[in-house]
Image (tube, rainbow, N blue to C red; front, top):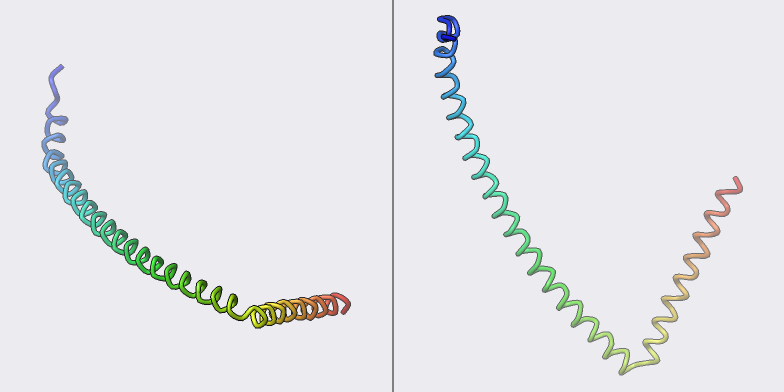
Length: 107
């Protein structure tokens, strides 16, 4: 069957619009690719920054732990007193918190 004049006229009217839409899709695709590349670069940079900061923090924590360990080895009596005091303070805080919670429940 031959295409009708109306169908041909409609197709000819739509062809420029289809070409325009294809061009717009290509521009959008390029724009999205560029933005995704920027985001990937930013994420990689942030990852490297965080990794280097975390590495430094781990090294510093290790040094501090070694210093504390050496000090505890040199002064075992002081270390025992500090740890016992910390344990006692924790126990007293726990009792106080339990008392406050129990007394609020009775009201």
